[in-house]
Picture 1: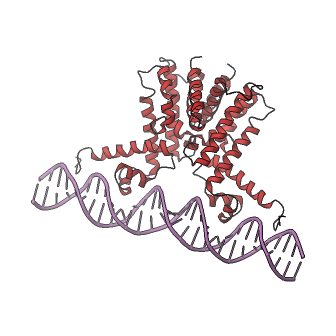
Picture 2: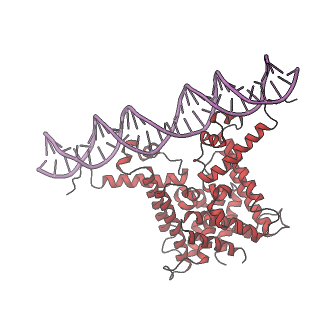
Picture 3: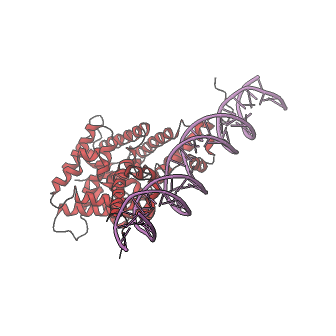
Length: 187
Length: 187
DNA sequence: GGTATCTCATGATGATCATCATACTATGGC
DNA sequence: GCCATAGTATGATGATCATCATGAGATACC
């Protein structure tokens, strides 16, 4: 029997709050731009309690990356959406302008390769998941098969378009990049 | 009249050595993975001399990003190469496996947006330059015009393919990603 | 050969970080 | 109302960092 001295589910709620805050902050400010003290402060706590919730920093980052991937799967790739709808969300100005709530591959992808194995593994899974999601949008019935060339190419175009649109620092050019990528799916 | 106490061009040579070492190290280890002490040590000097060559760290990073962009322009996008040759270099296993000598957008692109203005500006210029280079490969005579949708889409696909191929941590899948991107240009 | 001075080295400063040891506090069970 | 304890806070440790002040060494001009 578990004895609770704090309200039921208190710790789990705080854990979730740290995770969600971290997931957003990491995508916004980068893997190196989020510190434990800063993160805990923005959750309303101090740095000391962190290690009651996570093994270490990499543990948090790995979980935050997976959580971000799951959020994108449920959001832009939601089951009820058509391919066209998914593209208009993923390849949108809003996505480009708000990396904190967007795809973690487009937000942190180039840094994922260089992380510790646990974090690297989380990135790899999310990246493979992204490809699977694109494949599923292309043809609903082939969910088990290896990804098609079309799915691989479209996934590349989507990620690259968001990365480039953010990087060019030119709103008009950014929108043209997104538009060209959206158009490429209907070929 | 300039009085030289060290061999002619000594300082410029050292400056160049720091820059090239930094450019490779940044692409290999990330923007946050390169410190001034570590960098200077790998150049064979100590940290103290750094500020005789660069205003500050951001000054170095901005120059290193531009240098990396120029190297890619002269390498994979060299004048004598056809579009097909450019693609087989950019979308190659070697490029995926050696980010330190490859495209800085594919290596550091998702972090570029979050840097200080000087560094951000360097990334933006390199990104726009990359698009211009793709456009030039597509049609040699239209170098002055705004980039075509085809150029924008191809640039996105190229960057995204390398990012994803690195991230999936699966050699076979990585090669399929590259192949699908190479094939997409001949449509 | 002597010397002025360019280039680099040494060492210090203050900041920030991840992590951990320990102390406090609020709470549910009695 | 009291107490055991889960959850959080305080504070310390050792490491690393960017930056700067100052000093030493090397070299080209005289």
